Length: 195
Image (cartoon, rainbow, N blue to C red; front, side):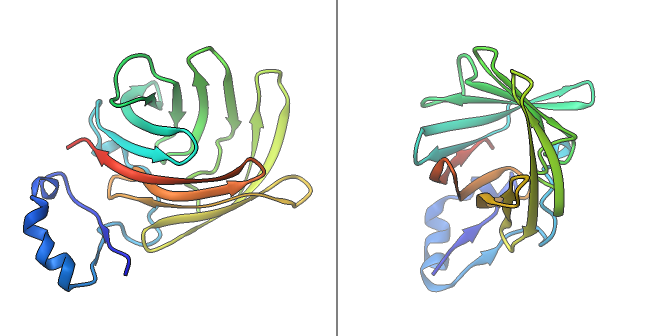
């Protein structure tokens, strides 16, 4: 049995012991994310809101919303036990949650034109631009699921390079899921999030 719970901010304060009898006796599918709505929703976030995810290959990471800069939105990502210190990388997103760029703390930056299609349903093409100005063209096909979205990315030769499936909450924050491709496989497990 798979249990998927999505909470509003107020609901998150409910103690697990209150829900335990319900979880043990009922299969729950109570997610408030409508199928087809995979958009990240910065209008529902406040600077400092974050999710904590355990990555099977690289450990715990915290993605913290840091507000708006011009027309872009910033998310800072921290490694370690808490979202403090110097971010490992910063991501610029559009209002739907498509990546515009990400930059590591050492200055290495990858840009996307027009964006990376992360939160665009259907077929979408984009260009990844690396620091040496190398340009890689990708095609991404994204479909909604009852808990988030899944996708397939192919290169210019039509060869499948990356596949994934990610769960999202009612604010559009990504949580648990898995991704695999030319770099290997990795699973993501949602550990917690800010209230």
